[in-house]
Image (cartoon, rainbow, N blue to C red; front, side, top):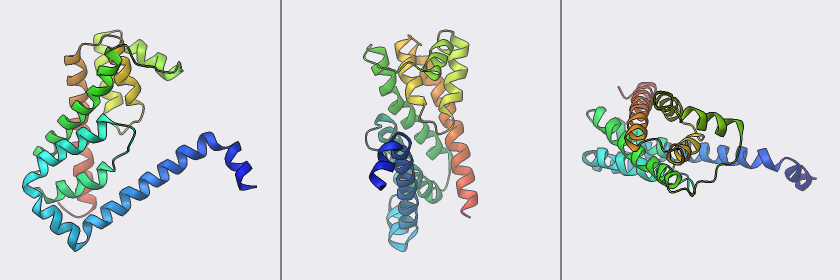
Length: 190
């Protein structure tokens, strides 16, 4: 019975199960890092928080094959740092460099984007520089799995790299400033 239900609804059950697993992994990792041993490890790495944030976000955004629970790692790093802005800047830069992988794949012409209303809308927006900048900022600021499509499409449509980099950097600065500030305040760290 369960096998038939799984087969019938597999298209939406698999992403749902993956999402629940990813959230559970983030919660478990965050709680583990809040333990005395986790806090000691983070305290020892406090001086390396900005380079760690850069490398973490580079790895998290350069691949979609192995999801990295970056919120659960980045938030404790930010909590240990005496100043939040170096962490925000390093995370944003690492994120943009990681997202440049999708841009490069799109630029090389190897991008395969399924034809969908979202893909057509993104492609249409990326044909004009100002709309491209606004669309990239809007898609890159929130945690958004659709941004991979935008990165591939930006490369494939010939959006200049400086425009792609600038838009995504601005968006990621906003993302990390808001997420880390709110997260630290909600968790009582600031």
